[in-house]
Image 1: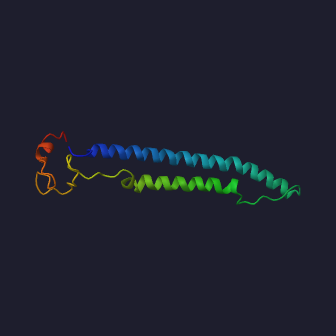
Image 2: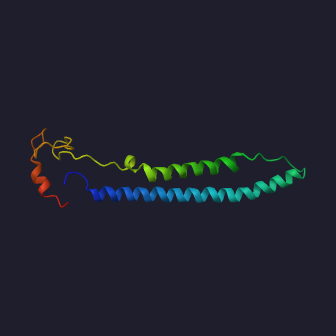
Image 3: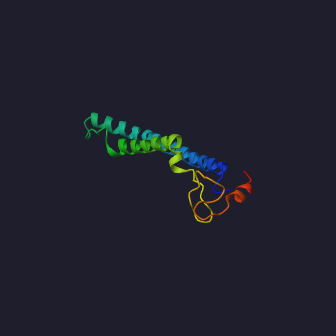
Length: 128
């Protein structure tokens, strides 16, 4: 066979999809945990500030707001790539001549037009 089989390509895409989905899940959990931990502190500081003992915190403060939002945006990007962009990550290779590397995507005969290697014998030995 010239190049990887369809099963190899499918397996590679599933491995990449699983990694992306796990990264999406991990980032989402970290972002939600961050929000849960910071929300309690934010509300306590706000309660103390409303009693007149400090400065009122800004709701869009970097630590409280931006970090989990960035994590969630990255998680959404990973999820979209896992769903729609796998063809960009795991490309389907084009068949090439094993001797000269000529592109054999649409062979016109059973010989390589560049170097003359007989491809029929190679294809006959393919297990697929």
